[in-house]
Picture (cartoon, rainbow, N blue to C red):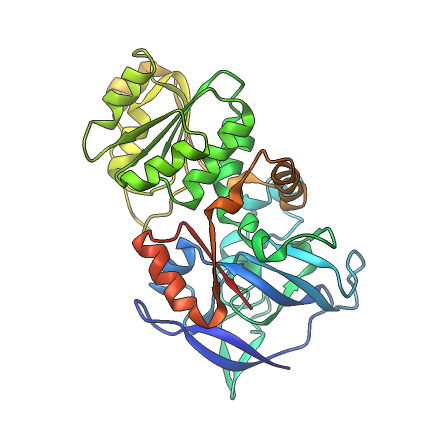
Length: 366
């Protein structure tokens, strides 16, 4: 069928909205009519070829929509179901079956390879194949084919125009805190970066009952917004030493838990030094392949800290996304306050506003 899609053609170049042909769903796929898709930093860095997904490509990986057709082997969906789309995983490797699909042994190929595992691509542009299956979905398209395993069914009255980012950015930040760090009520958390992922992590800390929640950034307006959402303290690391400020706030101890959403080497180093003895820090921010950061193994050896690298919040999407929706419905996870919507035709403006910081979490509506 003919569909509309935003095609990434070259680094630092606006996406090109084109009419493409979408093939039929394979036996294990569903065809989804997209209602909305979040715009994520990962879309931008893949467009810019930090990761070598072949271009031209249809990106997008925070999709939500309605099932329009089902493959012959699909038994857990029907036409008309509302779904939120999540990253791809094989479902059969040791990591998948042990409850860690975000560390699937085939994660890179399934999500960044630009095609199905058999090499086929679902989009065609007048005879030219366009890279597809980005994060298992390529949601910058009015219709797309998705492995049923990647889809999470939601309620018939679910606000699809809002829920797409739960499949990546919001899941990443909140999952890193709730699933990995697991702060207990009364403990302390520092979050470096006040973008969508960082603020989602902060909301996860609030929902977990942490009572000292420190947000670190260099944008005063973002820090003030973080305080409105539940941060107990904010640190402008452009004006003061972040590590010293965190230790002052915590009575010299440092924080029990910390989250770096920036992927900036200097910030990562600050996070490691801001932890209390036996603290746990998590990195979720993406950096260019080969990026290295300083780690003071001499000073930190006796601290007993843990450092984890975390993908997609180490979440099982069909379990975790409904939990986030439930928290939101009860007013305990107001991630909607991060979202600003754009028409699909304004997708390049959404990218620009995300990069400049004007918008925390852009979502394009079809």
